Amino acid sequence: MLKIIPKSIDWGEVGRSGFEKKFQSDPAVFMHRLTEAIPHQLLNAEWLNLHHITTKQHQYRLISVVLTAAINAQTTDSTSRFIRTLAQAGVFSSLPPLDTKSCFFKLDPPKEKGMNDPCRILGETLSYCIQKGDETVASLLIDEITLNNELFLLKACRHNLPQIVTKIASRLSEETKAATFTHGLVLCCEKGALETLKTLLSLGANPLSDHNGVYPVHAACKNLESDCLNALLPYLNETGLNAREEMTGHTPLQVLFTRLERSYDMEQRARDNLKTLSMASLILAHGADPSAPFGLESSILHDLCGRWSVFPSEVAFVKLLIDAGLNPTSPGRRGSPINRLFQSQPAGGAELFKLLLMKGETPYWTKDQNITWIEQFFCRKTTRFLDEFFLSYSATLSNLFLAAAGYADFVAAVKESAQKIVEDCRQKEKNPLELAWIMQQPTIEDTAKSTLSAPEINELEEEMELHFPHRFL
Image (tube, rainbow, N blue to C red; front, side, top):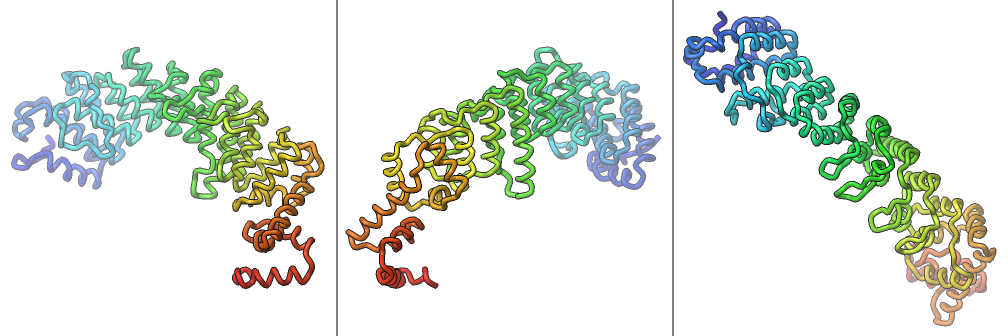
């Protein structure tokens, strides 16, 4: 007989230090000796009393300590024999079913503190097996323990253990399965557990149901798990692809849009953006609605046109939506997208403006309205947008705009507005060059210089040099 714990020492302290040391020295041999000695002694009242193991709790704590040390030492074969020997000795036969309290989901190995019953002790040991990914030992424990606890299944989903999921699912009642399977699908999509996801779907899990307002397809999109999305798509109909998350109200397509440009790592951001666009294209091809309202706006396009800045990836996303059937001319809460774009003047909006013109969007101002509009924007400080589109006289953008707007005198209208501002400055004895520099408007500066003589220009520039010496450094 192997004498593990001296009579005068509390077995719990030695169990946590002595066992680990012996496992580190020769885990296979020591586990074999434990397998031969402990199981039968646990049913020997005289031996238990000799070592102060007087209650069932103490017995199962000893088992838990041994199993934990064995799992850490990765002695799967010896641990399996140990569990089978325990079962043959009848150690597990008197245990009641493991209830919800039997699974703690801790990251640490089982501890003595708070363990008040054998079920809880073995429950936490099983939980630790699942966490460490030891399917063989976990399967043996599940076979020997009367199990009716959905939390173990959820933990197996989180750690991508399809074999354990299948075993535990066979023990659950039909009422418990429905809600647990849906929660399991969400966990698999969050963690990228593809094999377990497929296992749950084959067991009858419903991907069209939600867990606390979150659908599996939303979880896959939020975590950019493209493989999980591909596995879910055959089970989703149009309703499922356009379901809205309870907290945000977003559809799966809109969840993908919010994922763009999220990472601070530029390389990771580029990879994520490519994956996002690929997943969005896949969802659109299966029937997602590109025109679904987005927050308070009529669509993703209307929201994007009202932002402070626009990224190339967002323009590419909108192009996918337009190609899938989104109408770029549809009026929104604050006007059509292109007029909203003019009002917000986002940084980097040139490509979006160009895209809208190429897709048939048309500004609907008349010539008189357009001149008034230009004059209003000349008086604003944030004129980067206008400089980018109109005042640079880019051939591509100018031609696109002129063709879309339906009149050929837009550039003339810009010059006419600049002329009005220059005349107004001269009447009020203000320096038009100074105004042009403050507003960063090259057209006003060019117009002023074209109407002034050389001495007048020199005089105005000398005046500016006095007021703004740093401009000439």
